[in-house]
Image (cartoon, rainbow, N blue to C red; front, side, top):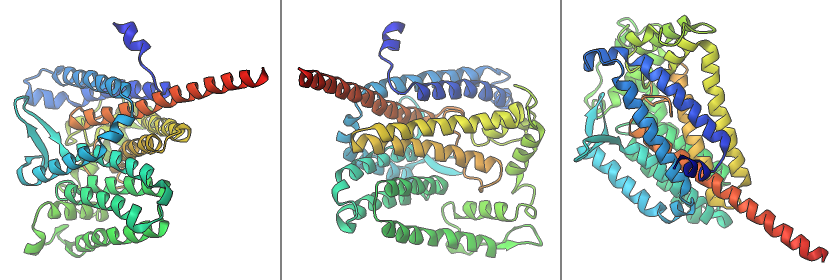
Length: 409
């Protein structure tokens, strides 16, 4: 059975290696960072979350394997219905979603009692849909009505439905989509105008955050009733904590302060596996701030290794894009890889206080959940493109050899 699986495992070997290395790092760091959580929730069963993570990694690798065995052209056929279903899930989440960690981002699946983030499904569906559109409209991609409007409309609709529950994810999804459209040769003028329009609410949010901050008290002023809706106060507070990092109260800057302390303790080589102290103070050290635990235990060297792995992963995906003979597969591999790497760098940027707190996880490293499984599905699709590119190039080479042989005769 194992020989059959190994024989049928195709695709870029470097990407497979990146996945396996990140999975191994994930097991080590999740086990280290969940000690306090296990002590509180599982009455001292410190291995509980390790076994849980191992189960998620095993399930994720199975998803990667089966998704990579499916011809990527299948995703072209289901792109439209999948996108429509994803919009339905986002709408359902807005009105009937489950609230966890101060956000309504989850849908609870009956019977199996598992919660999933609808935004993860929506991102995957959107990138497949955009890849289909870019390949379909490639001959008149500069046309505003025929090409740009349908594509940017899909992006804006998805982001607007994600934003009320998860503004940071909506922003990252929009940025990734705009990069993909730029690479897809849509009109730069159209992109620039769209970026300007999107920047308006972001600028307003930053302006409000600065205007409603009491420097003397070191906290947010009372907001007008019109702003006390959804997660707007949370967004404003996060911007204030980032802009006024040295003046905010300890409660508002607690997460970033503890992350800085953990990173500072790590130094060059780290304090060693399992010796983190920051895990006892950081909220969610196993998900949002797991990079701080990595740097504390493995030092700056360990942090740099993580960065390099993601960069190698992106480079190999760009190679797939360059070699893929079909436009859909090329854009699909590029879109999904950009999504994962941008999310990874956003997570690390938050940890080192370059960006405000976002709540996004570190792909393939943070403790498993629906996001982990969707990430694995995305990687499986990328490897499906890689596997079929290899097969198509081999067939083309064989055809050329036959043709050359016949011509010499």
